[in-house]
Length: 320
Ligand code: FES
Image (cartoon, rainbow, N blue to C red):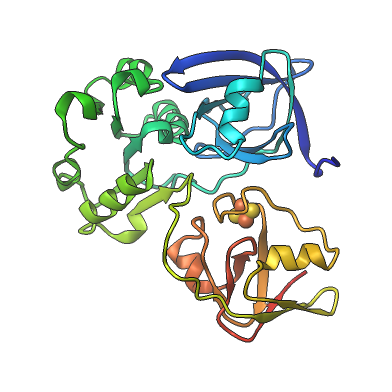
């Protein structure tokens, strides 16, 4: 399968079981050369031998990295991504990965950060905590997991952060973390960053409702299936660069319509999570259905994730 440009072929230099059903991979270049740098919160696309492309956050922030570290939790309903990594990836294997991209950037101007992580959602937070330590920026963390055995990096974080790290294990308390209490003490200048399962992020959204929305940010790594009826309708995509009009029937995505027309467009997750398929909007009204655009970006309507988002207008113009 042809690889997209800017693909790095990295070697699995180490593989470690760091918690129940969580495996950590350390990826290095074949000649151990320095790798392109990345910001805290960044992720890479990992191209798997089974044809899947999966996004994993980089856990090892360092200004000049010589390795990328990802931690992969075995998803209960894995469609082949995490299962393949757990069962088939070994030390010495070569993995094609993308350059790092960041859909969950830290606002470097924040006076302090409040991190909330659930389960494997700790991986981007690990990089953020490391950046805060290097830049001497105040932070605190609530890390919630079903049990201590399932909590990757818990010991490291406790050693690093001391009292700034609050670990919560559901099996010990018999209940979920008390988010209302944890977020009641937010200072006006605090910025909240949360990554974890969807129910946790929804609960954080409710508990932080008193805080400015621009100061509460989320990273989604899975999509909750919904039974809601599809409200899709057909529309036309006008490609302004190539002067073509493509019909997009109700039952396919813009990305699929491009593919059917023989137009190669980059993509990764196909779930509105990774930003790989972002396209510039020149006209029309997008119907945003992704999980990566901020509220401001969504309102500006300047770009769209063509894997999931659609159009509210009969014609949507894209700079393609
Ligand atoms: S392919 Fe990941 S957001 Fe569209």
